[in-house]
Image (tube, rainbow, N blue to C red; front, side, top):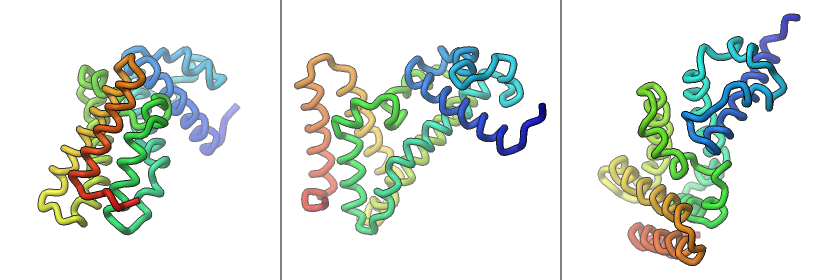
Length: 197
C-alpha cells in the first residue's frame, strides 16, 4: 500500500516528536529506534523509510526539540518593548514550572552535557539551536543599546542555562528555588528590568 506524501510527512513528524521525547528522557546516545517506532505504532523496519540511520534521527529530533521550545515562547517575541520582551523571557526561563518540565522546556539545561560528547554533525545541529536562542535574545539586547548584543546574548544564555541546570541538579528544594530566584534577581538588576512586566 502506498501512502500519500502528507501521510508520510505526518508519520515522520510523529517519529521525530517521540524521538525528541526519548532524547530528553534518556540522552541522545540511549535512543532505542525500535522503542520509538513501537510507540508511534510502526515496526522497526519502517524506520528506514524515513531516516538513513539512528544518527540522522537524533540530528533531526534536535531540530524538533528546539522548534517545540520556540513555540512556547513565541508570544515573548511579539511584544515590542525590549525590556518587557527580555523580562518575559527571563521570568519564563527561570520559573519553577520551566525547571520542573524537563520533557517540554528548553533542551539546553538538560542536554548540553550529553551533546558535548556527540558526533560532530549532531553537535552542529545542537549548536544551531543554541545560536537561534542567542540570536533571539540579541534582538532586545541590541534595542537596549548593547554594542555587541550577540556576545551579550551568549553571556545571558549561559547564565540562564546554568541557573536552571543547577536548580534541577540539587536535591534540596529550598536550594533549588534559591538558585532560580538569585539568578533571576541578578539578571533583572543587570539589565534594569525591575519595572518591566
